[in-house]
Length: 93
Image 1 (cartoon, rainbow, N blue to C red):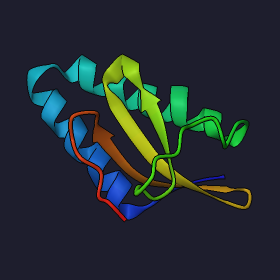
Image 2: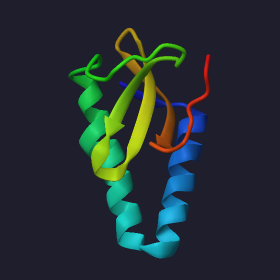
Image 3: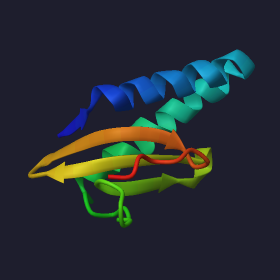
Image 4: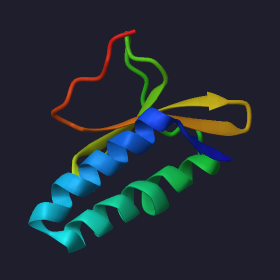
């Protein structure tokens, strides 16, 4: 099961709103790629992303849209923590 933490939903909303101003189609496509094409794959392959020292959880890199999704594997639940652009800095734990 995928569980989106509130902060990750806020991240997605901000990304969508930013892109929508310039290109509504790109905003829709980016959100679709993040959720349906990439994050949903974590159900079958929860450890497919990388781990980095000092960053909580794992990092799923989505180069098609220059995004990184951080998440934790909690038993059979994938907890999505953040969705940020590759140029943004993740909070250090």
